[in-house]
Amino acid sequence: MKKTKLYTVTGICVILAAITLVTTKNTNITGASGTKQTEIHQDKRISKQTFVNDEAGNRAVTSVNNKVKDASASQPVLSAVSTQKSYNAYVCEDDSQLLYIQDQTTDKTQTITVEPHLATGIMSLEWLDDKMIVAFSHVSPFMGCMSVYDASTQELLLEKYCSGYAFGDTLDSLAYVEATSGDSGNHKLLNSEDKLLYQTEKKERITNIAANHTNGDIAIVVGKYLKDGETQKFHVVILAKRGDKYIKVKTQRVKLNSVNSVQWKDDEQIIITNDAGKEVIRK
Image: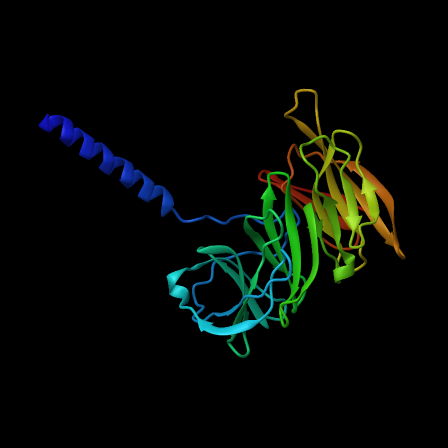
């Protein structure tokens, strides 16, 4: 009888210990959207944070309060500095939907609650310029939500559900891949006004996208699964900006058997990379 009681108590302790380990495990925020070029890094030098907590529907942001929190309690897991280094934006491990904006001149920090419908946390950050910050939140394996905020006012400027996006030099230069479920293909590339710029064929999907900051041209990588359902062949489509319209000026097969990224080298060349190397394609 004593042995039975001992075994019962021991079993309960083991279960409680397991529950404790699961509930105290830190959330690991990683990645960048498929179109990100800005480097994301950890920054442990931040000392003060001031909170902003106002809601506008499901989107978040507004009033500022005077509460201050010691950053040592939760270290940043994502951070990005604006183009002219006026602001530093970061996300801490204890709340992946809270975006901190630190003014580098005044050292004051405000926060934005980034919580689009169904989103579970910020995956990546990048600055469009010295004032506009882009946060990409995870929604599902097939899509995320891209939210653009004014760092000085915390105002939400633009929000799109997508699987990938790219900007030129302005907010209006946005090109994004419409969110779809699965890999059925027929991906649509849309602009900031949701107008169609390009659409792939059946079973073709847009895997990467890059916008030229000088002339607004767009390069996209399109992947198509072969009959085995696993192997993909890739080709590049270049869309040249002509006034308010985009014209397809080139389609070329990619020699690499996988693609990690695409970016413009200059106005006439793009670079495609994977873990094994790179390939240059001329416009």
